[in-house]
Amino acid sequence: MNADGSQQRQLTDMPNGACQPAWSPDGSQLAFISPCAGKRNEIYENAQIYLMNADGKNIRLMPRTQAGDFDPAWSPEGSRIAFTSMRNGVPHIFVLDMSEDTLSEVSDTRHADFQPAWRPGARQLAFVRKMTFNHIWIMSDQGFTQFQYSSSGDVNDTAPVWSSDGEFLLYTRSKISPTIPWIQLLAYENRSSGPELRIPPLNSPDIGPVSDPDISPDNLWIIYESWPDGRNHDIFRVDINGADRIRLTSDPGFDFGPVWRPMTALTAP
Image (tube, rainbow, N blue to C red):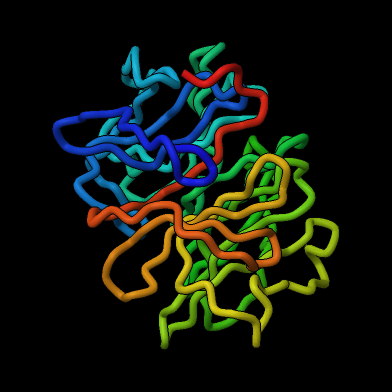
């Protein structure tokens, strides 16, 4: 669909559903997973990763994928895909180099690591590490120099997504009770000292619970999944400060996982 919610069209018709779309950096291809009978919080144990053209044609399995692969994320140059895999029994992050046909495990730890997100302009990945709680971590794209990015505490941080310039990171945060997630923003240059900014700020108009936020290529808008009535999940858009909320979908189905197509894309199919 367009950024205003118009011209919605279906791209896949997989027998067991499809989700977790991820654009290639040139906007010509999408990675996604199937089966996907419905949204799960973290783990898709039977899923495999597929690739397709932006018009929904030429659907094929990603090389070397197997059951338990999910969370696909394209590298900035477009030759690699990071993803989460259950192939060792615990969710860890792998990187497939499609030009070299090589597969590397980059988060070989005793912890559960998932939801990788490439930092534009740098050889780094943000990801979620689950210990007692979920927090955002950073590592090199080879698994080195790992450090915690979001603050510690009795909160869960998930769904990291970078600005197009790699200068700041968005993620969702929720308390143990009540479990109503909101958006946090932390600039990379402030990674050691903060502050972590809440979007929208406290005492601002509520934008509802938030899941799967994504930042527009010009860094001015955020799209996300929300369920303000507590039941129906739809896609909404706000500006980068959390203002001017617009509902983009109103389907009775479960709408989730929105992603912006890169500005470098050619004419839309």
